[in-house]
Length: 211
Image 1 (cartoon, rainbow, N blue to C red):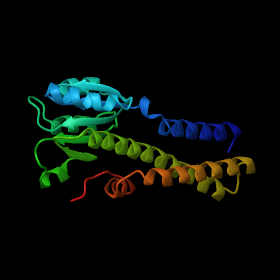
Image 2: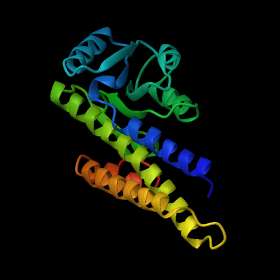
Image 3: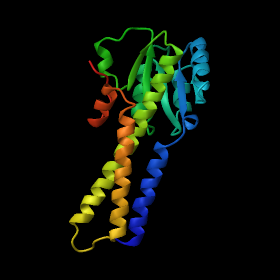
Image 4: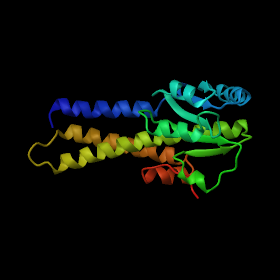
């Protein structure tokens, strides 16, 4: 591998890790609910922990406010005009990839298993439960970022070792291996912050609720 490609590999790795290491007050949560009181209360809870909070009173406004900087969406299931299910479908089919928790006053049935959500909260939601859910979903997002980068570096490492014609420098291979070991340590740390359900879904390539 030429020096330029070696530099690009390590640059890409550093960019991915920097995304996974953002501080809590750099994270953005989008609250979507047609009840203003609920938005106000949830916003107070989250701002106490220095989260950047955006609010939307309906699905259309939520989609307008959604961009790449939004990490977590707390989405009311039952709203007029555009339901939470419809908003969720638009999110999953769109260019952005936030973690999404459905929030509703209705106890979930079997149909919840068909929803591509990362968590499901039943109102009334306490401040502790709300913050814990956001923190776990952020840990899930960080875990997915680090896991993707770990697999990328592992594939590159294995292909380089199997290349007998154009071997990279020993220093580069050593640096690559060190990066992989650091990512392994980060994965171990993040695994301890995730519930078994979220972790199992991530390892299978998707996050789903358990039955």
